[in-house]
Length: 148
Length: 148
DNA sequence: GTAGACTTGTTAGCAACGCTAACTAACTCG
DNA sequence: CGAGTTAGTTAGCGTTGCTAACAAGTCTAC
Image (cartoon, rainbow over all chains, first blue to last red; front, side, top):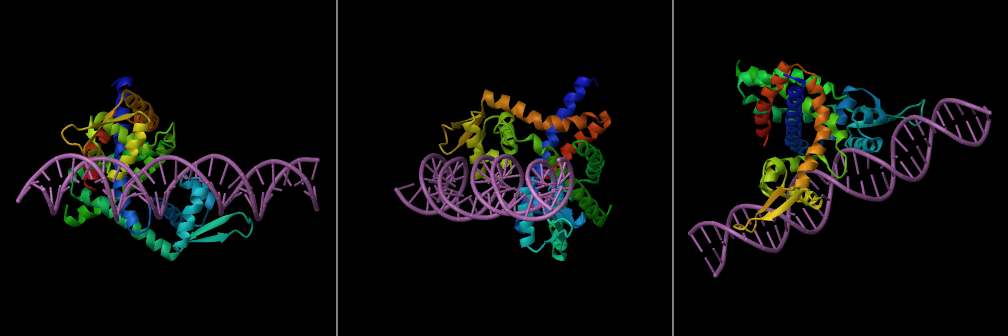
């Protein structure tokens, strides 16, 4: 296939997967709100849980969000007792975030809800179709990494 | 593979693709904001352009959104001259939506910004890898449809 | 050491999304 | 005809994201 065809094919695939990603997450968002947890909060909490104590600014950067947005997300998480603010003794400006035990539990449950919902229609596929998805996931991971 | 194995595999695939979708859209989010066009509007406009004249309710269903949300999205598109409302002569309740020439042009330009970014790493794949993505997209479309 | 510049995070205010509840208008059917 | 259903709109709420402006802490250069 010539360069022209490659570009056309790539573009069509990009459009297709772009739409799929949008609708996939849209379909899962309902699970979040049901438990009072939203996508962005769950995602931020996940970084705090697995990324250890982290500053608010670093967390905002990790989530690709501006600091004011993260301030509000963290406020919600703190109000729910999922995260604790700790002040750096060496630098009074810095806020360090640490997940509470409750935060870790809520993250686990929230993730489960989302994943279970997506796993249901996947389980309805044939084994061959699941194999197709498995192969494609490795390829897609490289594509997503290339977005950086 | 037994029922146990199917469940385990499905769950692993769900986790993988969940993460992929999140990071894919996060990577594309920056391409969004431009000249009054947002992701949801672009997505709805796309359905109107390619899905021909369509009722508001069907468009809402296609976008997995409630009618009031679509009413507002369509109002924005109409205000921008991208879409026209047409009243069904046989059924006075129905609103049919048709894209204007400007709407078609804006869709191409606007979506280009997002899609181009995703198409770039896809074009760097081998033809075989792109074929894997193409096959998987059909399967994933059914999974996403099953989230309803 | 102190004045100015930079960094970190917050507050305030805006627009966009998505939802439910409640409503109007139009159609259908007994 | 009248009750019930369907399509779409309006009103109002909560969440997310942004920029601008600000407060507080730290660093640097003189």
